[in-house]
Image (tube, rainbow, N blue to C red; front, side, top):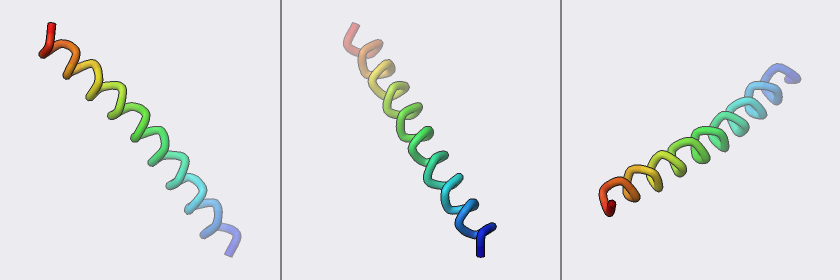
Amino acid sequence: MKKVIIKCFYKIKFSIFACNFFGKYYLFASYMVVV
């Protein structure tokens, strides 16, 4: 049971990291297109 909780926690942390990374990349890409 503990392993499942840890797995879920890491998945949530990873998705937050991925959201931040792709969000920044998307903003940067759209900025480059505008400029």
